[in-house]
Amino acid sequence: MDIEKIGSLWIQNSLTSNILEKHSIDKNFFLKHFGTKILNKLELCDDYPIMYVFTKFFKSKKIFFHEVEDICLGLSKVLQQNLPEDKALEYEINIKAKLENIREDIEFNNPFVLDANLTEDNERLKDIRFSTDNNLSSYELESILDDSIYSKIELFQEHLDELIFLIDELENKDAKTLHQALPKITSKYILFKELVTTITLFPIIVKSFHNLIIFLENLELKTLENTTKRELLIIMLGGLNADISNWIDTVFIKKEAEDVYYFDASFANNCLEIELQCGETKEENKNINVDEEMVSAEDLMFFDL
Image: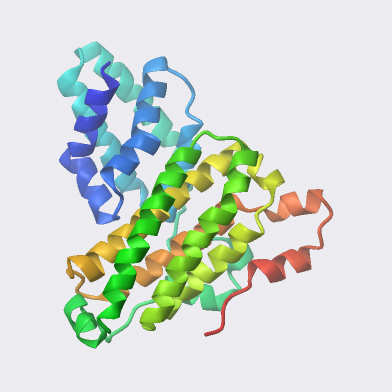
């Protein structure tokens, strides 16, 4: 199987591309972090540890099981068109079996109920549900912004490019290397928070990144020694960076957003999911005899604007 060719055709397939575009997932990002790895495992008839990360990432993007089925159906159609019938059928059966393994986890996904540990954090859950009747379009936003904001955005884009490159370079690196890079990663998110604070109109985005920065600043090496969490963190930060890029492009560069506040809930959800999926669980904290009340207080911290 020509993995590069099949992967390229997969993300171009309308079933797959429609779902990715609907959820603002960059096609090349999906192919690099999931598509190519899944195709490699498929060809080797190997187990799919990547499917766990795949599931967690899709849940963070509020993707439901029928949409995951469409993405995989897109792959099946590409395989049918490019492989011998018997081989395509073998892969299709394998794909369906793997889908059944993640069905319960995906179907249970509710985009507004993220984790039992945080259900009392009403402020942050409210941010995730956020909507407004006072829609503000990109053009309306432009009319009330100071022109200097656009030069600041342009400057930040250089930092964002550096951050995207850094995250890409950290893929498959060990825990120590990632932990040493966290201060630099965090510094870029601090710059983004400062930029959005300057605009003054997006308090939920400011709050979301404030909490994410605190989380990254306190993320310990021992947590990153968990391979799954380390891999998930890299993928989710990569996805977050793609979201930031998409937000800047849609709202400020192309000025195509009908409602600039549409992105608030997505940022709030993505930042919170990174904390939930990549941090220590309560069970892990029990194992090291940490006071659960102290952990809960830190987990529920939010920024009062």
